[in-house]
Length: 439
Image 1 (cartoon, rainbow, N blue to C red):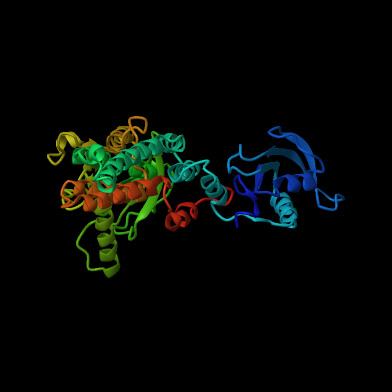
Image 2 (image 1 turned 135 degrees about the vertical axis):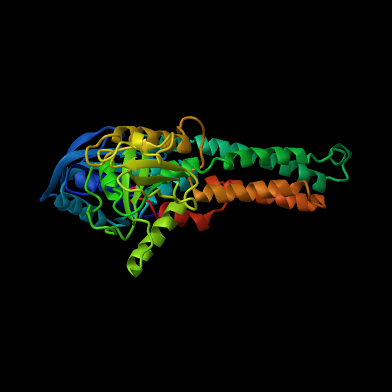
């Protein structure tokens, strides 16, 4: 309930040196006074001794700060307690706070949801906060910060304003058709088409923002014993996959997440591709090819020590051909090696740095730098923008002004749903439920 005061840890799980416990709601000031035993000066960190409500048993020595609403993250009175990050201290402080009337543990994302409800941020910015908390690489962080700062929100709001302008002109021609100064102004469907063009150009981004947020998917495919698992371990710099001389060891997909020069990459070790009578191995091969079809790039690994040439034309659209075991046979002597192919040795490490550089270039080209432009980051945004663009294109083909106005209303509504400028209760739970508790 909005009238409740909520409390939750806003930092990482214990044990840790410090934990920040966040409080928000009308009882915040009283709760801080009860635990700290004194009035806090707004926006100033104060050293305090936290005690249980009877003031006899100490909880911890720490720092406290009070942010009066509406100038706070949530727009309500907000407090923070900086305490030692042991489970005993955290549980003790939260238990004492929840003993107070109308104070309860926060639900996931409830702080950010209150900030949204109080106009402190919109839905796109709220999603940016979730992305920033989850960011694992430099470029994920940059993209999330830009979203939190409101760059995407400004773009989508400007499009919504243009759609509202088109709608206002159309409805004016309907409501005041008998007025000479209004009814005589012809409708301008070209404005709607221009807006549809801008939205479509934004959509035509090859999912660059979503790839950066979710991670670039790289499938490692090749025949059995070509060194796929060894290569994945080398690239991940840990023993993620089992390496064995026995062919067909890898049966299921082994996914490894790595930071490649600031870009997030999900690397998949897959079953060796060959004809097999083993039902389990055939299922592993089927899964490997299916994962490759959904991958952003396929790393095709060949074996210089054999005469086999791997071919996977039906998999990912883009591929990088790599030949392993260059320590056993020189790639210069192998007619299978084509210009642009890479040669490595998982045994000696030769060529691995060159492969990493090549893979980083492929990822950079496929994702792009987050500072080069504002990119779509979520399927929710993409679906709403598609609905808006379709509605705007339909304006030109509407057989009546009434139908044109209805299409424009649909476009305004779709654009408003992205940032939360219209009634979007049905999407709020989905947006905030994935947040951590303290956000």
